[in-house]
Image 1 (cartoon, rainbow, N blue to C red):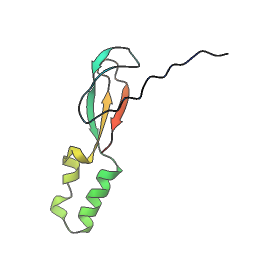
Image 2: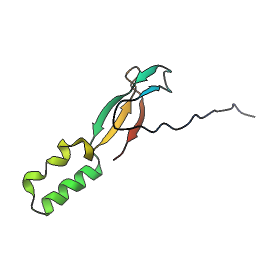
Image 3: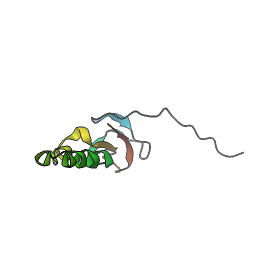
Length: 85
């Protein structure tokens, strides 16, 4: 019989920083949020290009609503989760 592993409830991360306990370093922290471009961001830019909206092609890269929000622990730097739009 192996060790018992207890899994807590999954945390639903939102677009803003959240107060959580880091599962890696066990510190009570406020998450650090970084935005990241995704395939969705690139597809929106391509669609704007295809429909002749060349001046607007850079907009998806400037708008946070077109990017994922990744949550990290500021103490140990561990990736905690992401908020996908």
